Length: 199
Image (tube, rainbow, N blue to C red; front, side, top):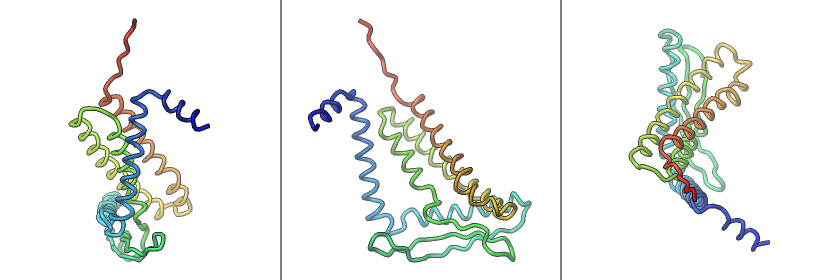
């Protein structure tokens, strides 16, 4: 059985094996750094949550023609495994009303940004183009996430019955579709083209 697995692995083209090796290495390194260093220190989660709250509130204010939406940031203890760590939450309030949207650590898009950058790093290619694509992908994902959060706030005000569906499916589908398109564009533009020799 083991011999068969080894034989199958060796039959995979070297470039694909190298790609898979980089995927495993980057994923493992990210998870170790994130779980043991970044989460306990709220880096960059707290900053991302606060920025997302601020820009989402501004977007909602613009959408409603200057209606004032404010942000309140709070910190709460959350249990990760056996440890308790502080996490930042951002709440958006229309003037004189209760919160219409809560933005939490899982909402900040960090994992998707890292996934996008990690995918691009796993391919060989020109580093200048690769860096430009990673930066554009992260900025694009953050901007799209701002729009997602702002529109979820609008849905919660105007169509509260549809909030859960919009939150779980519609806007997540848009974000993942954007990520997939970024990957395709990256592979088409940056990945060195494979050449084949005809004997």
